[in-house]
Length: 99
Image 1 (tube, rainbow, N blue to C red):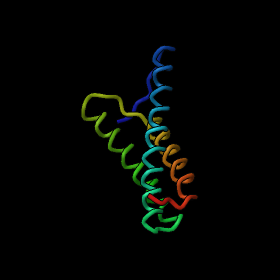
Image 2: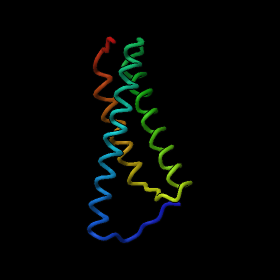
Image 3: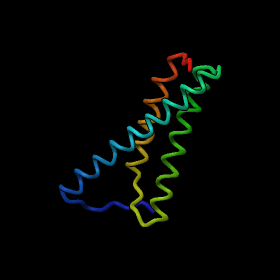
Image 4: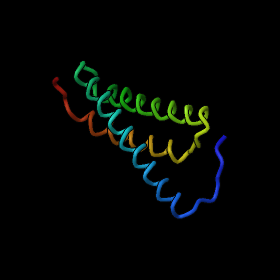
């Protein structure tokens, strides 16, 4: 269950760093998966959805693990995951990767 709580300035700084980590991690995941799909011959749209889907799956799994291990689940983390996934997939889908 997600809850809203008041945080101190120090906690807020940590919170922003955490969102940046979520954004960067899901951007990287979506770029790699999208690039791989493009390399395998999928269209830009198909590749986009593969990469974006992978990034969202990673974000959801991470939040699920947080909930099971006593960590704090956050809808803001998921928002950062969605933005990262969109960014990486949109950028990577534009290229035809050869590796």
